[in-house]
Length: 458
Image (cartoon, rainbow, N blue to C red; front, side, top):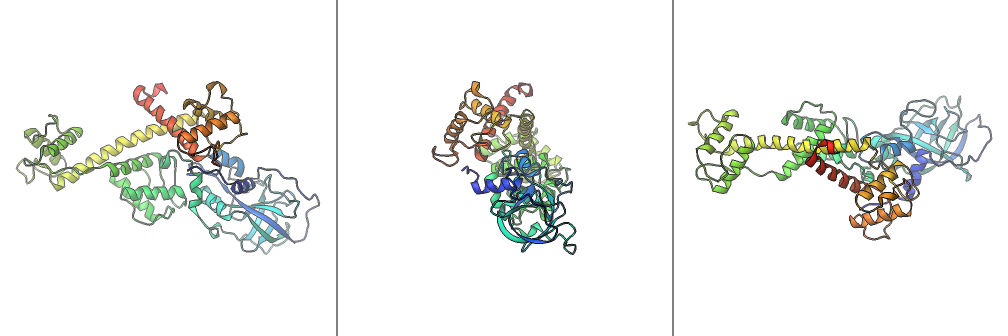
């Protein structure tokens, strides 16, 4: 079920981003001596590419509110312990916050002001990527009384803040899940924490390569499990990160694990339907060229023997088990067909991802959550997707999210089962579920066209 971003979360994120300008309450010179001050404190993070989740729907949307996440306003590289403070606070000012630590002012933000109620806004940098976003949610909004030390004061104080002290609740990210391609769109690396890592661990578990707890931490156990998978499928890519190709192979292997069927034992005593299954399988692997008639004849015997000889399971036709499918031959056939099927299915997934990349280059996908009153290329992309599904008039595409667009979104949501009624809080709001659904439908249609007509048709 799609959920509208709660208003208190939106306000927190806007504060995190410093995107809502507020009039500074004081224009007096900044004190030269230390003083105590009441603060309203939020946290912000540095968005990274390929996250599972973005609070505003996409990388650029989150960056527009949180900044590029590389340098602060004074040019300092971001680090744990830096804060954004109101304009009167000189860079280098230290702030001690009981229970949190000591911070240094390096950054600004439009919403980070001195408020009329006497509170001063502060924004704490709390990390990057999915881990940083999850901690920002956990931090929420806090009101504390702290001590301010202007530049030159508090020399004995050093930065003393660790984001690790802020709870890491990955479940908070689920409602902002935007990766329509799932694991294919994610790039977790060794040492990272996040939902992407947890999804990687789940996929490794489902394919039989991971038996540990789903911690969401890309640790040694996760890397070892991924390396086992790479070795099994003779892949030479690194095991300390997830590439698009590895993700496709993993997803294909999981699909195979759900679809696989045991290969029947075959001999002259086997029932015809099992022999026919073996004939189809051997033909698919290139060992059998006869008819699928369920008859165990010389052609079937020879096909099985050639496979056995290639995989060192039999020397000649007089070897024990030659020309029949027993436990060893069955397992070997299962391994070979699995690898071929997984590679074939992975290529299908990669073709779909090529379509995604093509659409991204054309700005044909929606990269942020949208509602009435918004405008721009993302709204135009939304209207185009709705028009392609028959919910919006083509001639009305204009990049402005007005009542007509809201009505079209609502109709689409109800038709697709995203919401049930027009009174639902998310009615007319293009959030994660709506955008993922629109993207998936469009990508699926283009993939069908690709299979029928080739890449030139796209």
